[in-house]
View 1 (cartoon, rainbow, N blue to C red):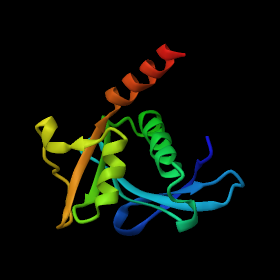
View 2 (view 1 turned 135 degrees about the horizontal axis):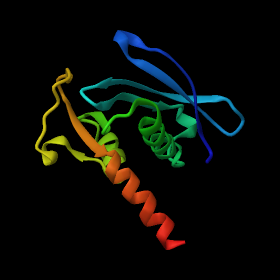
View 3 (view 1 turned 120 degrees about the vertical axis):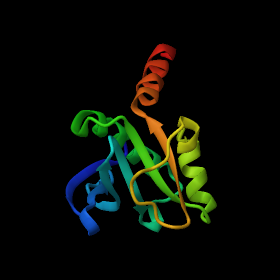
View 4 (view 1 turned 90 degrees about the horizontal axis):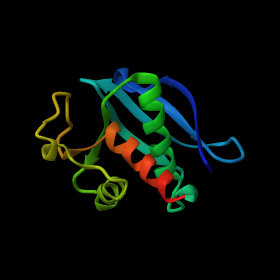
Length: 136
């Protein structure tokens, strides 16, 4: 892995924040999240401009999914995505996330106007790991 999740601290409005660190142990970004209704709600993920478009954000999300299962015991990750930022939507869809409505649910947590929720269950995460192991 080229990234690691660093120290967790308090973010704004009761959210937590985890630093994303690069190979040289420098902070290159962060993830803001909270745990609600059995889901890890990712409110924001950001990387410094010079570290974007190299797959580092995707690596950070994959690490967060693994840590989610181990640390918080949630059923999956729910990403709050701005509707008007096509690259953000594409980022999450490419990682296997899909609209929450496809699971028959709707977020009971507060959703900011202009955002949509994309979800991925930890069963899907575990299934992908098994599939990858089987190909080796």
